[in-house]
Amino acid sequence: MSMQSVTHAVNVRLGDDEKSVVILDQTLIPNETKYLTLTEAGDMWEAIYKLQVRGAPAIGIFAAYSMAVLAAKIKAPDFDGFYAEYTRLSEYLNSSRPTAVNLACMLRRMDGVVLAHRTDDRPALLAALMAEAKAIHEEDMAMCLKISQYGLSVLKDGDGVITHCNAGPLATSRYGTAQGPFYLAKEQGMNLHVWVDETRPLLQGARLTSYELTKAGVDCTLICDNMASIVMKQGKVQAVFFGCDRIARNGDVANKIGSSGLAVLAKYYGIPVYSLGPSTTIDFACPDGDHIPIEERKPEEIKELFYEKPMALPEVKCYNPAFDVTDHTLLAGIVTERGIARPPFEDSFRKMFPEKFE
Image (cartoon, rainbow, N blue to C red):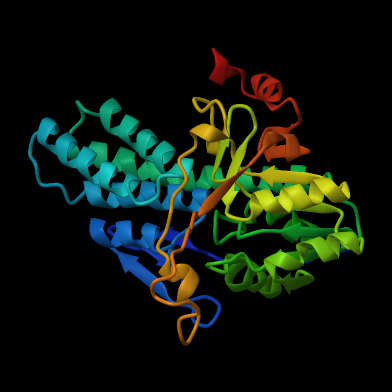
């Protein structure tokens, strides 16, 4: 098998002047490629909430850069005044999306830097924040490569894999998580076929995943979410890969709505299901999926978005949870940068992450 080059999308980066954060507006893909340069907290909050930047790791990277940029604009001369305003901005950003654990995790990490440098002069504190944000980005790229390598280890040449939502470079950094093995396989000359769930109601699979895979030259086929069962029954799928926005200690996984249903189908057909993500998405303080908050979004996303005319009467009620929880009993493994956790997951986590259980 010959090595091949693969094109990786760039979704989040620090502005050249280090006074802004630049993102690829994912709400416009695949019809338009537009980069936004953000400097204000309100625009950064909107970018997360409106899914202009999305995917748990990407949101974490974006939040880190955002706080480094916003901190430099705080005028309070003393540390107490600075920290009060910094905390307000951090809590404000954190309110944009409650389910993705990386957002809160990276904001806490940046907060720790502020406290660790509280006695430094302001330029040194700001430099430390910027260095930490860059380190978070670099660490995610390294983690994604390791996750991709472990994920690829459970596949063989010629396999078909079904994926849900988007967990490639647009949702993370280079390679991605649940899509990372597909890019790595392409680079190594390994042949896989990816079945891409469109992922209603926001169509992240259709708009983003099929876009990324096609641009990278990865063999893929787009299907509606309700077609997953037939391609499984026809023997075209050997594994299910999806990402994760939060993982509970027992292995329950919160991911884009529809992931749980896909896992139930796969269980019936005897197809292994893997959730792939960095260890930062594991919430060791969360005992199980019942304790994961589920974001609910506006009914217009179901009835109006992507349609020329509304597809339901205005008075029709809608239930629009953004995520569901896949029970740990449906998973063959959880793939992280430290390896593949197998059931029982809490026991695996204790061995893989002993420092989290001290």
